[in-house]
Image (spheres, rainbow, N blue to C red):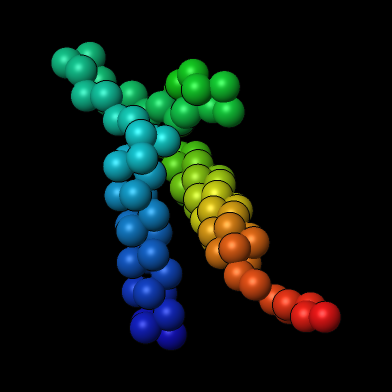
Length: 90
């Protein structure tokens, strides 16, 4: 049980670090406080409560997974489109 919880916590931390690197999640530390912002579909940032951080990370993970699948599918299609499948000789 401890292994499962620690593995889940590790994946959450890993996804959070990747979201910050991809600038999906921005943390602003000002003298008046700390602000958390999430990038929307149109590229603008919106403030959110720190209590909603797990939901934001799950949303980022879903977007990253879909983008990876589309990227992989495009790579496979590009690779297959240049591969000769059958040649007909007369």
